[in-house]
Amino acid sequence: MLRPRVLVVDNGTLSLPHLRRCLENLGSHTDTVDAASAPSRLQRQHQAIVLSGTKVRADNREHYQPVINLVMASNVPVLGICGGMQILAVAAGAHLRPGPQRVGRSKVQVDTHEPLFAHVQPTVTLFQRHTLYLHTAPPGFRIIGHSRQAPVEFLRSDDGRLIGSQAHLEYRADGLEILRGFAQLYQ
Image 1 (cartoon, one colour):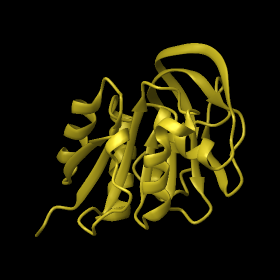
Image 2 (cartoon, helix red, strand yellow; image 1 turned 90 degrees about the horizontal axis):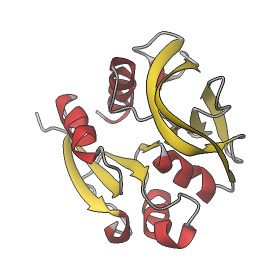
Image 3 (tube, one colour; image 1 turned 180 degrees about the horizontal axis):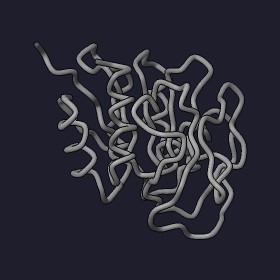
């Protein structure tokens, strides 16, 4: 049986090797490109796209235009993590707001009716590292997870193809189980 292939877009995260290892441990083969080198289209060899956290602010549309073009031209499931979620939201019309710096674990409430959360309880403990927040979902998206600190911890497009996580799922056991839920969307 062939392992599904995931294109990981490296937006400058420090945790890229860990993220790739997590996806590979879940049965996927990963290929990586940086944001500037993102292809304009997938060539049918990838069954999903994962957008990593960012180094350049996610609302820099010019910098992330190749990533946005790739996501919008594809028809595969896409998971944006931290700044990757913010890229998806900004592309759909959302605005980011600065807030208190969060580093470390936090409790997040999730909608367990969502396939993404098939392997977790309604309250999960996740790793956060950010200073920018979404306060509302952009048009065409709905909030599927929230916390006391952030009204938008997870979002999903109305068609279910685009998913975002404010937290870094590549850390902590609950995050790995959420990645498992994502993997089941394309395997």
